[in-house]
Image (cartoon, rainbow, N blue to C red; front, side):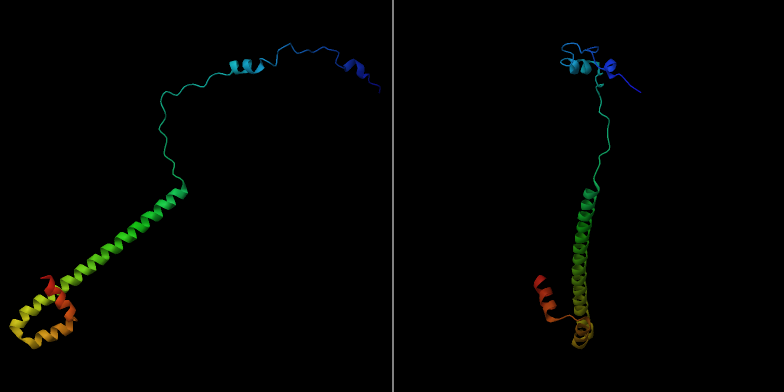
Length: 124
């Protein structure tokens, strides 16, 4: 099988017009339709990354723990002070009724020491 390749060679049959590639980009861009203008922006949901959500959750947990511990501590201090005040009120009432022996027994039972008494007297 002998094939004569000379008849398939380019003999100038196809020629590119002069300046064809110089204006090709402009012609292509002219044929592309312009994107429609969006007059109103659509409301989109705000996206918060998972990392940011974790940071916010940790900060909220720390703040909640801090506020809870402060509240509990203040409540305990108020309760202790109220108990001491109640005990001292009872002691003064009972000292008039029952005498010194009862008051001393009550102070020992309530575990009220001299520092608590001095503190109470200095505040009032």
